[in-house]
Length: 138
Image (cartoon, rainbow, N blue to C red; front, top):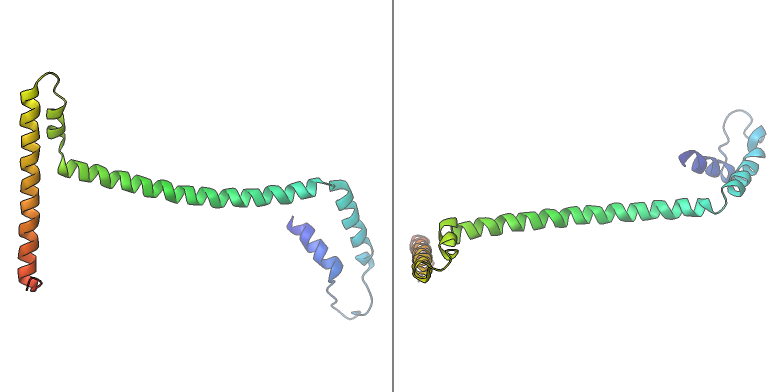
């Protein structure tokens, strides 16, 4: 394709170098004929090639965006899994899955609530101690 474009630019803008810059080279009349023959032989396939390369570029851009979106979804899923393990460890979730034992489910719920309360108190104590040290709380 690059050779065809180079040939096309040479036909319409020939480079004149050397001692005989005013005299046309011998193949200057053959180049338009070659381009005309290429256009006639290729026919409508040339438009299909241009269209397919455009579609390929669009598909490449779309795949690039999809790759980034998939990466962000994977990061979000990883963070949500980490947060779930922090707030609701596997042992606590297992207590909810005990079939036919309502007392175990109540015990598990109270156990999870106690863990949440401890986590909340730890967060408040940390915030208050940081606020006192930095002087935020006036």
